[in-house]
Image (cartoon, rainbow, N blue to C red; front, side, top):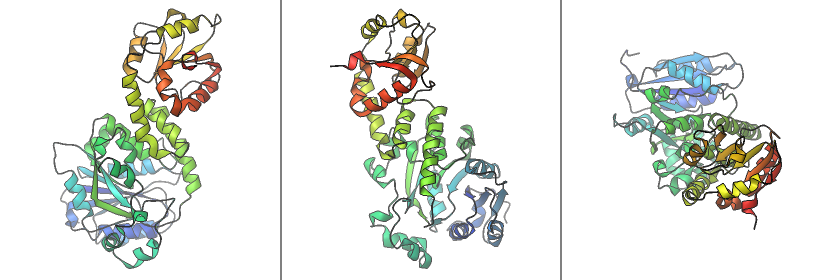
Length: 409
């Protein structure tokens, strides 16, 4: 193969799916892009099937690299990172095993990154990525038609659309309009500049169960102010295959808690609360509602409310305050403070010995029954219709007694 530096490196993690891998490689071998302009890296997470033979069978059609790591359980993040370490190109495309691509797939990913002055995290469209609602008849169709023909046939069928299509539609197919764009950043089909990938540390290898690791990478890209865009042209078709859906959902719930523990912020509390209830698609709207309420409650000072609460405490009571605001009375000098407004929390914590957390209170880092009294202030009033039961449940988890005098009417 050519020694010319590739423009794009395609990283495909795989595990015991050699037949599906062959279909993905077959699509990449049909690209309307010179072979020396891209490389394909298969990152094998310990397969025991014919995966190495499948890779070798494409050696005369693709510029291929292969990495194998021992099977020590689900380590897709480690596999992807190992694959990227072999990459020479300035642009990375991540693709799932079994994804079917058309001949212009890589051209469209390259086009999405055409402006070298503007880094981007590109979300590629994924037809038929509907694990809980597969497209009727698709399995038979992909066996007898090229991917681009399948798209022509099914593109008007909502059962074939990307599972995220409603979210794309709501933002007019511009993820940059969203406040939680990274919830749509899925590694089944995405791309990012190599330097930006490593600037945020790549995939977090602590994620060793299915799901969320790609969104967590997206969260860190978002924190780095990398804009998110969608390419509907750089599409894939998710090849039909069996899934362990219940097991995957359990893993998803586990991993969203891990994401929250790593990045404890209100937006991720909301994501945790929603994913553990299988209400994922409410995330954008629910976080927008919190931002709207935070703006409305900016001048809502609960210092008087807290001072009155102090008078009902017993000496030595350990206290947590949900919705502390910027001024906390001296009688709560040992309290653990929480507020969804980071600026106001920092004002409360300035020059004090308080412990504080930027949090709404849906899921706090405190251990079970670690305080005596949890005070829920009226700064939570605007969120109580939506989250009241969850807030009280969490307060009861961490405290012996829950008081919400500012919310009683």
